[in-house]
Amino acid sequence: MLPSTLATKLQAHATILPSQRELLERVLFQIEFNGFQHIHLVGAAGTGKTTLGLVLAELFSDSMNLAYFSAQPDMSTSQCQQLLLQQWFGLSDHEGTLMQQLEQPQPQPLLWILDGQGALPAACLSLLRAHPVHIITTGPEVLPEADLNLAIPAITVAEAESLLPADMLRSIPAAQRLQAAAGNLHLLLEPDRIAANQQSSVLPRSPAQIYSTLALVLALLLCTGGLVFWWLYQADEHQVVEADNQLRSPVSAWSPVQQAQSTSSPDPTAQTQPGLSSGPEHSEQSGAVSMLEMPAAELGLDAVEAEVDVSLETNLPIVTPESDAPVDVVLTDAETRRSSFLHDEAELLSMDKAHYALQLGVFASVAAAERMQLSYPELPVMIYQRQSTNQLPQWVLVLASYAAASEARAIRATLPAAIQAETPFIKTIAQIWQEIEDFQQMQGNRFE
Image (tube, rainbow, N blue to C red; front, side):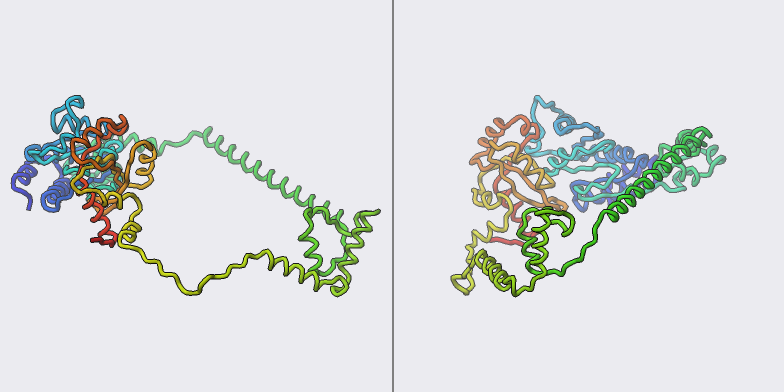
């Protein structure tokens, strides 16, 4: 059951479609009873995303502190924070920061409705998910970071008939109009745009365009055939020339001496076939051929093989194990715990739980977190891994530790301008301990 006030306000919206009303009831139920922090409504263009966002904003305007705006394609994190600061707290960026206000107790729950007409500000969403803020976004694609993705249902034929006037239905049935609009409410209610799209899609091509296309295809085929014919002709001519110039000589049987001579020769091109040259070079090559035809015993083949074997044995390193007994490596509890961490969790767990830290950012990939860490080598940035509310891993960058919150605020004021623009906020070491322990339990590693 929905809360009576919200149910009453929802029933008062007589202009929304039945499928939209059913989806809004599901959203209200999930927020009220399941406590999802981030709900994302998925729908293509013209499915009513903006209408649903406006209705939700009106429903929660009395019970929650509401911020509503559309995401622009080039919206930065600082611009997003300025809009939230202005709509939630009525302040400008000169009067305070969003993170400072979020650290204060809130008289009403905070709700952010973001109409995703453009690209969603991922950095700002990641920053807000670390605070007790309800988030409802809309967009054309599924958002993996959201706790729950709900698909906006397609409009039915009956709903299309209720939207279209009777004179339009007499000319073209509602089902045909809905199919032509592909579920887009804007195209459904604007038949002139549908007719223009259909005419542009079936516009016949002129004869000149058809002839030019055929001529281009024919020219490409002729060029391709000519290149293939030339390549085959060159290959056949080259093979014929090589066959005419090649002298066929008797092939001697393989012997280990021939392999040893070919292996020891530094220049393979120096060996030529017998009978191709005359003079001293021919006599040397003839001598090599006669040696190949000599029996192995006369050439001292056993001695050659023995010499090769000895050289191979002398070049191999001889490793003699000191003991055949297995070596037992005993790790202490601290070493066992440290070996299960990939980042700076062990160092953070050794800090005082009553101290404080500055959280610089939360990232969905370790590569992005390490890039930011390397961007500021002068800062002792540490990384630890935790799990998000939808059980996905996150990598958190912090500076730690500080004995008092005032000391952390003083350090925050000295950070580079680019980091201050992301508005780092203060958290306790005890919170970091809990997040690390929760992630280790999810991975199956429990430590006392």
